Image (cartoon, rainbow, N blue to C red; front, side):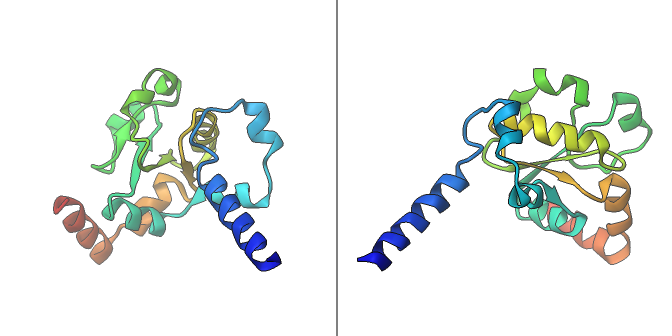
Length: 151
């Protein structure tokens, strides 16, 4: 009986945690519930991002200003500057993990937190677009582009 109760509680907790960001929440609620697991869950690296993009599980949002994006871009992902994000939430796919990115990670972290308060499953790219460019070189770039083209 005790084992069944523990198993049932585990299932309920897992289901609840999977839907934590299914609804909007205040910044106070997000910050108040922040713990080591939340810290881990908010981050993604370039290798994991590339795999998720190829699998169709992730939507990349480049939050740089339009001029930065026009100066150089990756050729995939959507450019929604951070200051336009609140008015363009309808362009985001709630069925995917939304990964925010900028050259390093300062604005991406802010965008990720905002999106989480709006009910999105969101992460930020810890090595930034600069790290992603470094990751996608040579054979990795070729394989990635081929995989993305076949979607």
